[in-house]
Length: 90
Image (cartoon, rainbow, N blue to C red):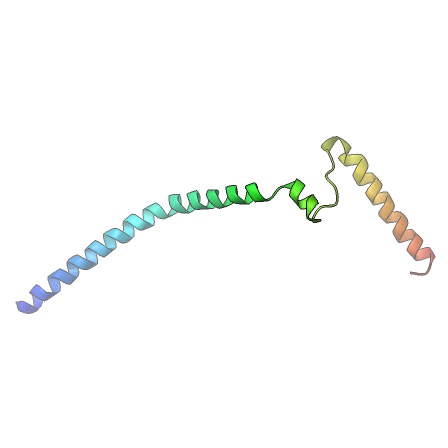
């Protein structure tokens, strides 16, 4: 009988721990999403296309209206460089 009395408190402790775990597990997705959103906001505050250009990660910011002509010209320049290199033996 004394042995069973000693087991009862540990059963209660396990039950309480399981209940706490269930509460934490149910709250985890919402907390994770909130923290991920905060991290994304901080990233967006620090990083921008203008900053990327300033630090040299981006060469130019091309407006949408000029994008197609810019890409066509870039491909043309690349093709000319490639063809010139072949003619010169490179």
